[in-house]
Length: 125
Image (cartoon, rainbow, N blue to C red; front, side, top):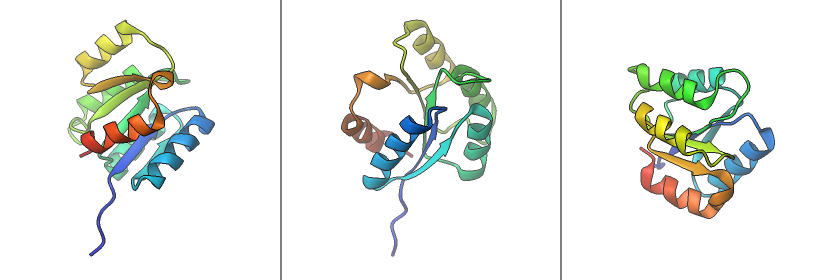
């Protein structure tokens, strides 16, 4: 019997960063999806039902906080754990994100890929 891999969606506009995360997580046994903007991320979330979302805050068009609001208002996506993931260490963004339903906030340069994978293992649905 084939074991189902935990599915993670990265909503990240930087293709190189997304590729690094996607590759590492796939090597660690996850199924990974990537959306390059919020609109694609919303569609991928509805269509593919990931068990965890890493959501960049700074993106062209709608930012991550705006996408998080939409995810949490939609009955189909509101219970999917969502992590805000940014290059910025911004306390007000984390506080707003937490109020909107984010389960964590990581500054990309403050956490190693290994630590991120271990954290995801404990928090993916």
